[in-house]
Image (cartoon, rainbow, N blue to C red; front, side, top):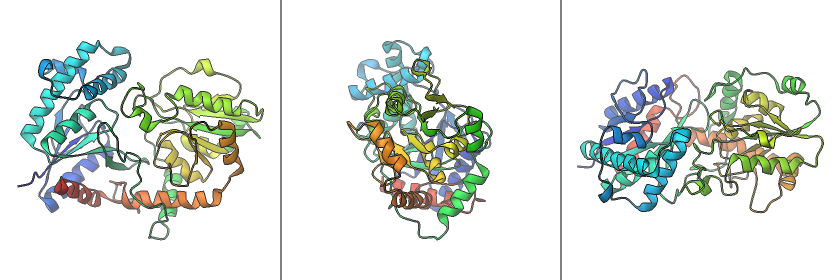
Length: 413
């Protein structure tokens, strides 16, 4: 008999995670006779199924169990990748290589026992960049289970799954829908209306004010505003550069700092140009060494305020770029994302001068077709990939469709 259990790892303790988990558990049991088991480091308020508590990172596993380092049956490259990721996520609190290795051995033992007991046919890791994920992928593969990456979706109030594998990351940014307008008329307009009116967020932000108000407050009236939106290097898997994800996510920049320097150099000779910089909310790095009159830090401002104020929007792999599509302005892609290769963004390539790239965006070269494709991208994402757990929203795929997708992966193994 084929395995009929899905093991879901979540590192998000939020009402929408509880809504997704409860809905999936109910639909999978009712319609597909499949069980959904949960594991994570935090209790999820409102989640009905029990959640197996695990440490937030890998090194602390040695406090709850021990593993056999001498017979750690894992590829050396995977062990190195897990340790480097674990050290990066610990930031200032990381331990020695040997301490993290003990954590890997303990986590390997713990997860192997868990999977042996639960026998899942599908494992959903939480986020490709977390140190747990390559280890869980390898153990799922050994057991003959499928493995996917579950994350918050491209837009607030959504979730998504995408392919996950180690070490090739095949298909990580491949959009599983054609770049065309959805079949249902008005889909894009309904989605845009909701986000522009309710302005939901993934992280706390400042209050929304208009772009004109932002320009007046910052003395930027009449200036050419380049808005730079960036990821967190560690959370995105870009840092350290030796990580298996790093060059898949960001082929041309090893860090946000490099991207920021590239953008500043591109506008340096234009006295009317400024770079408004909104780093990821969890990016606590100090970029003061790059301070100059053309750099306008705006980390606390609302994303929609900045998009409204901008002439051109620049982005690495951050999901903020997808919300930026609602403002229907030129977008410059500086790293990998679902927009690459879709004919939507002005794309940075190897050796390309930022000044030429940004100029093409300001001229709006081919922008009419890019805008049409962008609208189709949004409609297609909601029609075929993203899950919207809130049944009151008049668009998107609900929990039942998402559960049907997962049951299909479970059946295929």
